[in-house]
Length: 429
Image 1 (cartoon, rainbow, N blue to C red):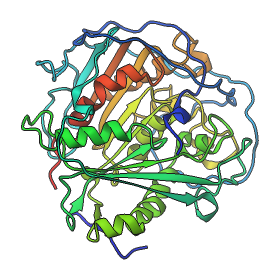
Image 2: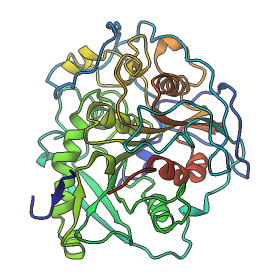
Image 3: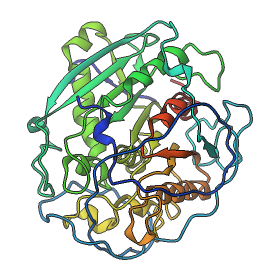
Image 4: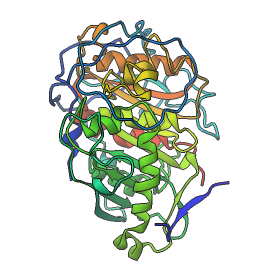
């Protein structure tokens, strides 16, 4: 049933996704910790803009929003209460350490269903170790490519949207890693990485090591990693914010209709892999991101589950951060990604979608002690998103990091390989 996007059709670092607002110290619900080691914390980033006020609409099912229209400018002050607090997290232990977590899962997961091992809520830290599977272990390596796309050539994100109050970049870099185990001419699963190149080097090492792994709980398919640089700046009024924080299918359409054809058409990639095909089987298409990049990853799966099903988010910006012009997107979701878990209860009031979702938030994440009324507490937002996924029986995995900050590097070094193993479980070409 899978179709393929075949040949003939048609740098900024992770620092750009560093933080959407200044982190505060805070605490989180108790969960059992499976991990120990040496490490530290760290977070950072620029201060977030304030958000426009709005009122929550009645709960209901999702409708795909259209593209952003002209209008509007900078945001005003925040208003309203975003919703009720989530329930306590369920204790569990890491499947890489042995037993599975005790969180609910099942009917919301990707087909074929592969059971609930590794689903649920987990705690790690405050000490961290680097997973050896994101290092060079001498396994056969694939090939890495890079090319640029001009924003002016885009039909979807040209950098001149009426919602922008900050300058956009003129071009973006696309970084592609094709693993050694990929066989040219076959349909390739793939994963989009926001804020490219981001962690593509760690992900490429995981591909080197885990595509040849014999343990079925760790083994991953030879997916192609495609890291996409954002359009520039951060938070409300920025091109990055427009791309990542908008609650619609707009960013998904950009990836599907502009980025993927550009990957196929790139001369160097074509010379090395003349038969390259990117699958259109949604079970073979994933998204990865931190901060607003994490919000983008979830939104890709949420609005277009027929194209994206495997989602990895770190410190996801499930807060009120979309550009606040008077557009159809904002009218439907006045509090942006906060609506996933707000009084609107988007997740709980929508029939479960066939997604596998990994989430992380940390003890000292952005706004960890901020009031709910400001809709800018990343820790609260992620805990409530996880609770909503649990209530709907999704295959989800939520990892809370003690002593860690926003998009914490130590957390990612310990968990990226494990997250990829869990989120790709059950994939069959």
